[in-house]
Length: 359
Figure 1 (cartoon, one colour):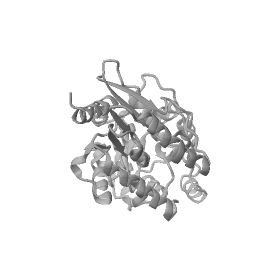
Figure 2 (cartoon, helix red, strand yellow; figure 1 turned 90 degrees about the vertical axis):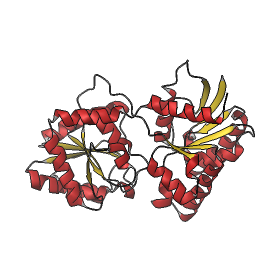
Figure 3 (cartoon, one colour; figure 1 turned 30 degrees about the vertical axis):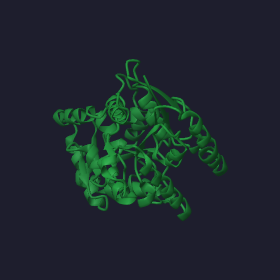
Figure 4 (spheres, helix red, strand yellow; figure 1 turned 180 degrees about the vertical axis):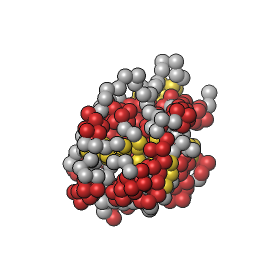
């Protein structure tokens, strides 16, 4: 049995999404698989967003030493492209694979300094030294070709999976609370508040929805809390029908998806767009930007809009409202989500490993 070592993000980096990615993949390994896979961090490890020096110590000193020690295997797979600086540390005879999720800092630096963006760019340029790269979307693949000059034949597209929906999910107190405040239509927004998430269009989009339908909207946010200005504007527009949960447990997030009426994803840039897929797995209507990778995920099952147009976003929410109770469209959404499986994602790994490690 051939040996494989997976490396995720260092826990001190505080990357919950990368730990979830590792956990989802580790959960679908079965004993009959033809690869002996070890991984670090361990499944379910708690991530802590350490201070600047703690993160630097972990990423640039402790982690390279671990890679040198643990890479004496047939193949090393870095599950996070941000760990590409470790590629030169891999033992000489091991094949190297990396998963590319996005190149967001090169397009939307956000709060990163010029030196931080340059460091990220230097790190990800190491992807060129991989024997194969896995991209979670065709869009991210083309970004790597365009921004890093990587040969397209080196990059294999394997879409992310989505976790199965539990049979029993509790009612959402947050959704019920919004309904008690008079919300006729509860819209869920999941994720960070970074500029590329384009949350600035929410007040006008929700107002447009209300004007066209005569219904009262409520907004439920899971993830980073909104900045004060936007939070106040939304509160004024929706007469207080706004609830922010902050970071929620998986159990609470699932209850939000199950009990909301629609999900909105207005992003300018996504390497994949997991909230779209999660919403579809619950059969929920989605109002979604038509930018970057998002149409690859939503296919023909979501209501798209120009992310620069709050008017279009409002009309997409109206379309979501009009779909309520349409069982055929709900089934289409569930069928779409069923095509994205973590086990299939893992089997895609194995096909690539097979090509690099012929019997």
